[in-house]
Length: 324
Ligand code: BYC
Picture 1: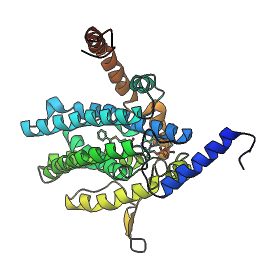
Picture 2: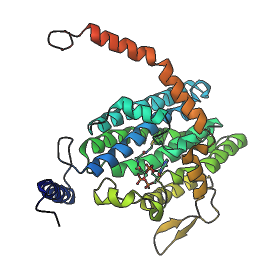
Picture 3: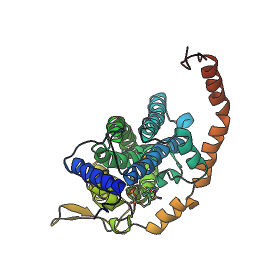
């Protein structure tokens, strides 16, 4: 019960009631609307992590641009990696509508205080990894982001809508690479099967820990930031991916994978969550390398930011403060 001696408490209880009514009615919350501080914080956490993931996600694939097997593949990969940078920018903009500064978010990443998707801490050892990343990693991202495109916060929902359209091309280019390799020479088949074996389990972890160990889910579901739980999305990804693997004659590395007639779902084996927690703690195969690459890029880009600032200052009308 709100304390009638505390008008602010009454206000915020009433505001919270109205806010939750809007959420229940499926309305979008926009930047200038009242929102609980916790809703804002949860969105800043998720959107900034998502933005960092897009930017760090350029590194494993960028690693193959100079070694793509032909010009058409090189052009496709270049465009994909460039798209990921664009997604990062849409997302930093969406987070900025919540009153955080882009530099603040980037500093948090560079100082190791902010997370990014654990999946980008695995190495890309062969060309086939590029195909499998498009198929699994972008495929998992589409499942997650199709849901986020319907989330309650307007700017995040719209950013995800645009991202999903581009991710669909990414998934197709990946699956096409996989399909070409899987119908190629025995060596190519072996290379793509090996990539599938290495990326399958980490891709399932992209949806986050099991529902019972997901501290943020209850709040996110209540406020319709998430519309499905981590386990529901993971199951959906498995259900759509198993037939895709069969279509290109590749085996998924799970001896317990079986179709369950009763539920209509593909049941899968135990995920090694200790591996996931090690990677998010910073102990994955490439965490240090990825962070070093981002820190070096920030240092090497300092002169560009300084030049842009100097240019803006030079062209600012000192009487009105407006740019000339
Ligand atoms: N990696 O309570 P939970 C892409 C953390 S990029 C690292 O379930 P939540 C692409 C989680 O943050 C795709 N950390 O969390 C780019 C939390 O820690 P904090 C990236 C993870 O938020 C380039 C703790 O574990 N997509 O598509 O309810 C090339 C407990 O988890 C991970 C997004 O970022 C993980 N995988 O659910 C190709 C989408 N999973 O923050 C492709 C937006 C969990 O409390 N994010 N953690 O310290 C989300 O949808 C949700 O945040 C998650 C996690 C499903 C990831």
